[in-house]
Length: 332
Image (cartoon, rainbow, N blue to C red; front, side, top):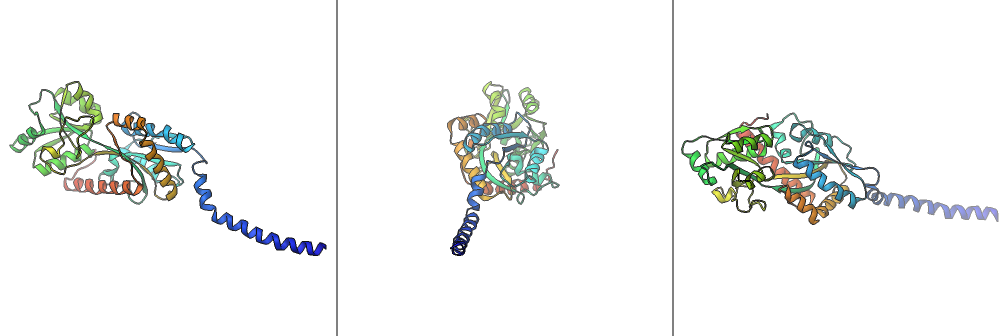
């Protein structure tokens, strides 16, 4: 009896053991998906210092993502080199879904301006979400003789050299106006400033005839009557400045040069984590309070897939690389 019992036990236990092992193997992907993000807090690396639009975007998203994911989401500012230092840190971080970068449009320009980047923009990073786009505005002091952007075009095409300021060499504003000047055969001379504050101060004082910057930067001075908005750089008018025509409406059909913000991950982050993070960001962007806060920053939100974000970013990389090379633009 004892011998029969042992044989029966062995016969029963072995199939059960095999089934248990098989279930473990088949269930591994499910366990992986369920495990994230339970292991540790998620880090959003804002690649610019506190106070700027990248920092604001990260801090608007963080509490909503924390609530949706059931895990702490912390913002870490890692600025420098037009966002390249923070982006490098994320590119080199473990691809485990716990480190993401919040980047600005400089991400699409840096490879052309900084050939010695510590990462390969296309190979080492994966797009998670395009958060949104925003217009830049070309403005002039209220006492300026330029009433419309057409006045600038006429003046520059009739022998007058006109200076314009931006937040620095290689900024998107600099590149957009460079592309515009080339298309319109205008003599526009770039004056780089170290940030939006000094640029606005000189524009208001009339020390620089034109200034190009984000709507968020310029709008308070436009609203106060100190600056006059001449045109916005996006293909559609800005909801923040609905009465201001686009560059396209001013005689440059198809012109579109938006500022933009996106979330990236290290390139080898598992696809299911990227997909889940994208879905949660999209859900956050659909919340009215989030959209309103971003709109106050001059940002029009975009809800889309990681693939759509990747396509957008690669188009930006290609567009601005051509402008930098054609005009021999150097970083500050």
